[in-house]
Length: 345
Image (cartoon, rainbow, N blue to C red; front, side, top):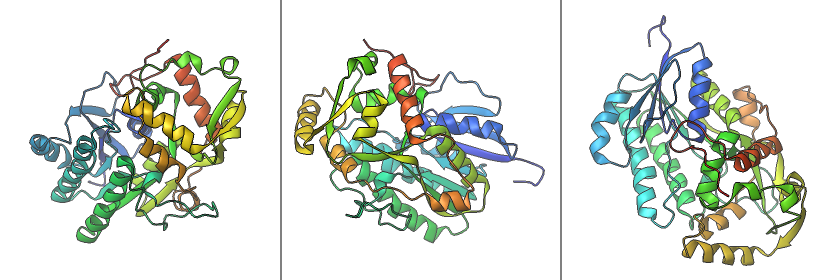
């Protein structure tokens, strides 16, 4: 990049939950001159700095186009990920792992100076028995039973090798907690609960009781706050991993309070059994193995992101999850294929 020019940023998975928030954040950043958003399907989303191109990272035949799109980039942000089909882990492996390898190879061949990659809390090994929040030094071996956590953990090892072999590329790994916003609600409902769950049922007056597994607790973050952290990591001279999450920790009593319902503890084994039945019948897309992984996720300490990125979430975890609930009820979405709004019921 010449001193008089701005950054040319390429974003894979630019039409998804994080991608749509990030390209809008990049639009507002003076140090960014242009954005190229890559996705399997071109969106009906018009932004002044952003151009769009179609590429399928799971296809070996798309490698030449991918290399062409990346060759002049000052930075690549790799967000592309497929959660489904959960019944075909080979297909998600092709898209998520082999697709990521193609991105990393293209970055290396073009000698792109900066690579920011989306990892996840799911890359971490199960948390400590004490329940204490973990730093970025906690082991990243995932949970072996779920495809999502296996793939995220595997890519952590790939990035270890990439950093060793390509020291001139500044590599940043973002490890966020669950990310929510209104515009992603329809997509997330389809991914985890299925397309036939009526969003209108997620209302306080219809849910006097909220059954849930004992011991469930997790962290959440508004997707726009995650995009802000990505942007800061992009333009600052930082390397390594950053945990991203907002306060407070969400548990069953917290969820029940958001829905003005009374929490009812249900043994996790019973919940898993129901989920497994629904998954085998292809009624519920979320697999029981992913449920096992969620129950074992560690809590994240975000001290490093707050210190080195000067980053602070603008929304609490409750506000982020509340935005998701509003989006589910209203069938909210965005002008991209993954985030297409759809109200059922």
